[in-house]
Amino acid sequence: MNIVTLPKLHDALLVSIPHWGEADRNAHMTQFYTDETFLLDELSRFIGAALVAGEAAVVIATKAHRDGLSQRLHSRGLELAPAISQGRYIALDAAETLAMFMVDGSPDATLFTEIVGSILGPAAAAAGGKNPHISAFGEMVALLWEEGNPEAAIRLEQLWNNVLRIYPISLLCAYPMSAFQRGEHGESFRKICGEHTHVIPDESYTSLVNDEQRLRSITLLQQKAQALETEMAERRQVEEALRRTQAELESLVEQRTNALRQLSSRLLRLQDTERRRIARELHDSLGQYLVGLKLHVEMLKQTPSAERLWSEAEDLMQQCMTEVRTLSYLLHPPTMDAAGFVSAARWYVEGFGQRSGVNVTLDAPDHLGRFPDAVELALFRVLQETLTNVHRHSGASEAHVMILEDAGQVVLEIKDNGRGIPEKLLAYFHATGAGMGVGLAGIRERTWELGGKLKVESGSDGTLVRVTLPVKSAAGK
Image 1: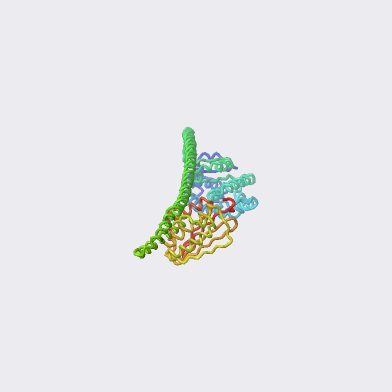
Image 2: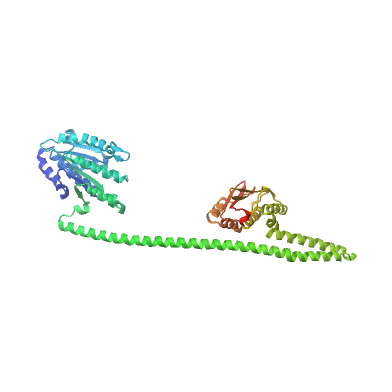
């Protein structure tokens, strides 16, 4: 390098921003920036001034920033090769250097001291002179912050402060302002600033040329901060109001849902009561009338000329009595009142097989005891509804019914070999309780009312319906 150009180059490189120029020789500074071009321009002045003055410079940065710094120094007439050969310019990769002393996500103090000492020691020796000095720039803290590890970044700043007590160094760190955009960054931001002797705002502030402009800028920032705090407080109020409204809506929906379930349960109970009344009416009134009519027909049969007609009438009346008895039993089987659910299930399964042509088998223990009326009635309705669905919709030729009692629960299971339920339709039923007609919906409501569980599984080999109800002894009816 031509020594004649050194004074002019030295003057040009020393024209830096006031904040860096005002810093002590042993200072720990941090520069916040928005534009990387601004950072590199200022960094080239900071590092270039040290090299021109015969001091040492250490740069621990990303490759992009190291290359950008070299280009700017070269454009200002400063070649790095002599300084590198003299050991006065040391450029290292930030990520690689950081990895040398990080342990379990945090900088290790001992390793850091060793690594940094091996860098700064030779640099200080190369600086020479009565008062050797090092100008250093580092981005390792910024990398830690970018990785979402602010605690490690703050710890590394503290370790650098220890280094400043040992070596003659002016240290400059840099953080992009884009890394501090969220409100929760505020506390960590304050801690980072607290670890530095000088905090330099980004270029929007440092480019201001006099105190009047800076004061106006500060006043404007204060107004914006106040407006932002007010806006955030109002937003918190709105969010709290929305949370309360949401909670109220959820409570209202829950209340309405419970009311609908209670109404549905009440309708089912009324339906069962009405069925029982109709069964009793059919048996006690119409059934008795038909019996009386049959007795009269017996007497009229003594008329020879009407023997064939009366025989046909007798057959029709017998069919009528059978149908009335079957209808009465289906509405509410009297055998269930007398002998319990298992007895009623055996009667129903046998009749269903005869009426539908579906081969139905029943597996139930003979010693199964009595259950509360509500449980027995619910189980019987589940059996009716499920087998009716098997006959109408499944195309099954066989069905198996199993009844068992286990650990205070009674289990009713019906399995058929039909075509099964479409997967999407079954998924919709599990999610909403709808889409499968009134049969399964009624089963679900009966099960829910008694605190039980309904399980429906289906595939290409058929459908399984399992209802589990908690039970007490018949004495608790």
